[in-house]
Amino acid sequence: MPVHLINAEVYVGRGKFDKRSNVAISGGKIKSVGTAAPPRGGKRVSFGDLHEQYLDWTQGPLTEVGKRPVPKDAGNLVVDCSGLRIYPGMIEPHCHITCFEDGAGPVGSQGNDTSDPNTAHLDIKDSMWPEDLAVPDARQAGITTAAVFPGSANLIGGMIVVAKMYGRTVDEMVIVEKQGLKMALGENPMRVYGQGQNRFPKTRFGNAAGIRTALDEALHYGATLDAWKKKSKAEQAKSPFKRDRKLENILGALRGEYPVRCHAHRVDDIYTAIRLSKEYGFELVLEHMTEAYKIAEYIGREKIKGTLGPYLTSRVKYELRERSTRSGGILDDNGILFAFQTDHPVLPIQTLPLAAAWAVKDGMDEAAAVDSITINAAKVLGIDKRTGSIAARKDADLFITDGDLLDTRHHVLATFIDGFCVHAV
Image 1 (cartoon, rainbow, N blue to C red):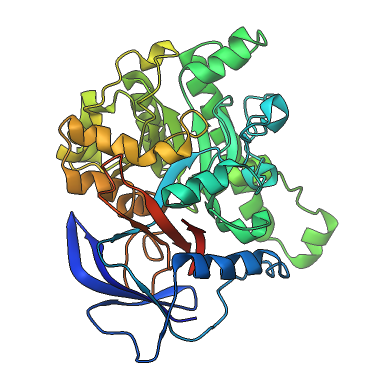
Image 2: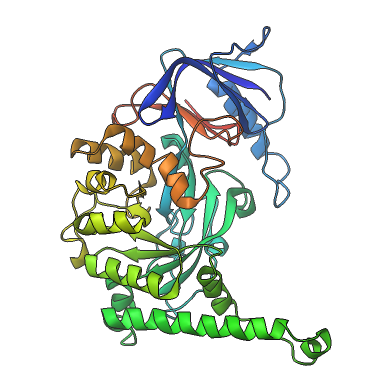
């Protein structure tokens, strides 16, 4: 279904727009961007017309696992976007959408399993609920992709996935399995286990020790597995290797298959996360980074990336006392690759652009702020080759507004994911 969005201001990154530009979409991908005119004889349609095709798809057969759905070809369709802006779909790099379900109360809280401080064997995909009311909220705001995390009750919470913000099943939503392994330092594990259950860990050095123990066990598991693989098939058959998914998932991070994404608000917890990454050699992505602005030069020098936020909440716990809305500008000035996050449902996911706007108000470069919720978020998640910017051959994930993204008065008129118009007004 070649769709041509014409006469728009198209965001091309670093604060720049192509004026009166056209975006052609076909087969779920961006076909071209520029001044090339659409073919003659194209049918003029509205966003609403395209949205109807998406609604028809939602009533059709489920997509085969492992295959991304694409809109059906309906000939050349043209939408005049004069006076409008086209932005790449925003990317939420850290949230709990679909596993802390909106409007469901305790029964919808499926993101923390507080049975053990180490639940590395859990996969958040198995708790995701595609009918979460927050998913259409995301689309209506122009958010097309999100990293979905286990919560931070546990020292090691489980596996993270990346999902598109549409789909009737989890398999239609998820585009990256095992994007990272969630870990957490600071108050949360101490509160849940030390205070709530009167068990280990009760302290910050207990947190670090618990993680080290798990990492050491995973290394031993890996060495044992490697030795077993060297045995003959006859020997392997006599003594089958006992699989341990908890240790297997930790080992994957230690062997560089995916990063450790570590919840760390306070400076001391950030240092501990970095120390652990150096000791064990895993790739570290810092999550929340509330006090990272205090040591931004060091983090920048170490080339550690991360997500920042949410910083528009009240100070509900001690480790948030010294947060600052100037953080974004300070991290950017120190060359740190980071992306704003809402930690939904801590903040509603649709407030993601508000975090960037507030950072601009408090000194952050405007272009850097927009990039931090689009292409830089994609880089943090390792998906920048397929989404995060408007470029040929990338996924057709974008949205159209009647104004500046960082102006809270703008309206999102349409959102496209994989070429589907999943939202229209």
